[in-house]
Image (cartoon, rainbow, N blue to C red; front, side, top):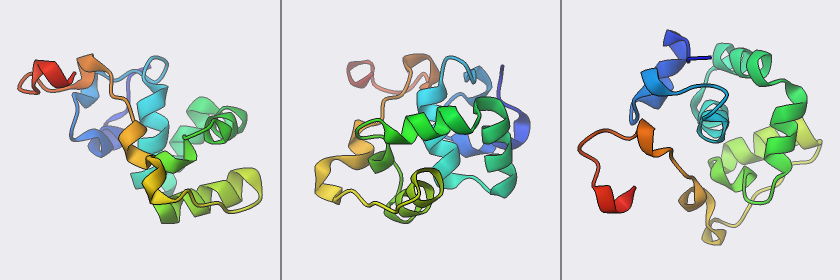
Amino acid sequence: MMLPDPIQRLFYRYHADRLDSEHHAALIIPTVLSNGTVEDWDWLFRVYGWETIQAWITEPGHAAMLPPPMERFWTMILLGAPQETPRWAGGNARRTVPADALPAWFPQELR
């Protein structure tokens, strides 16, 4: 399913109109959890479900992809106990972006 227009605003760095909720969940979930509003979170949980998002955040390194305040918030909500990954452990540096979501000007050697 393609992203609805209100959600696409969160993906201003990418070709948001090319993102698909089935194929790009690894990018969509952390972005919406990090930058979304309550309405965006409602959409996220309707599309993926509580269990899928809870499973995503328990995967090693996934919670660290969120900004520290959001990592604490979402681990408290989804796991019942807040956690915060030390920032020197990697965090957002681990996020991968699908090549077809990058703009045409993005350097080929960095894809």
